[in-house]
Amino acid sequence: MQQFKKLAQQFKGFLFYDDSTIHQTQLLAYATDASVYQEKPLAVSIPKDIDDLKLLIKFATEHGLTLIPRAAGTSLAGQVVGSGRKYIKLSIGFHPDKSIPLLHKTTLLKWYKKHKNNRKASKKTVYLFCDEFTNYNDVEIGKTTILLLEALGFQVIIPKHLESGRTYLSKGFVKKAKVIANKNIALLNSLITAESPLVGVEPSAILTLRDEYIDLADAQNREKSRMLAKHTFTIEEFLANEIDKGNITEALFSSASQDILIHGHCYQKALSSERYLMKILNLPKNCSATLSPSDCCGMAGSFG
Image (cartoon, rainbow, N blue to C red):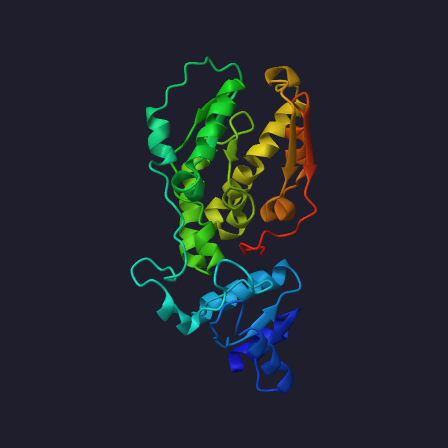
């Protein structure tokens, strides 16, 4: 209780933790979600800004506590955990009634090592960040990205690096994420420049390098992390910038008619912009892209 009192003195948002009726009502409200499980949390926090979030992460790390992102309580992540873990599949960490994300029959890295690009690159080199999601689950998206960039005249190289650290950060394992961040900064720093940028497919992974890495970097890596962030882009940001430079034109695409409805990624909305997607998808002749008015998809990532 005392530790939460000290936190509350620095916290600008709402923090519910004590035995008062108001606080207990909030704790009970967050003890369940759309599932049948119930686990009363030690505290419920509603941060006001990014400083509150950083304070929470630091507090949880120092006291060995788990932070669980919570939105409407209807996510696919099973937000109410605690002792509910006894219901999780013991060997691999999934509830018996939940389906397991399918792994692709190969990894993007394995495919890339066998892939031969017969096109002669006419433009600059692009380094592709092979994130943990694209490498194991969404391999086809990664392959399409490489083939598209090559067709547009770029040389694509997957450099040596570790995973992004996004999954560790989303579950509060900041110390582990910090180790990964500093190793990646060391591996990528000498390669990534304005002429050879780093591009990523999964927004939550690639934008970690541009956002959290600066805070996670050791003192000797701080400036390197800023330079890495400066030349790191989502795939749609990179393509949109190349369109603005005149390096990618309508003539490079087919004239097939296509209506496209875009559901923006939460990380795109928070740390980038959906306008880049709109620019590149509306470039080909007879393609018409519009933004969906829908909100968060409910997957409850770090912004969910």
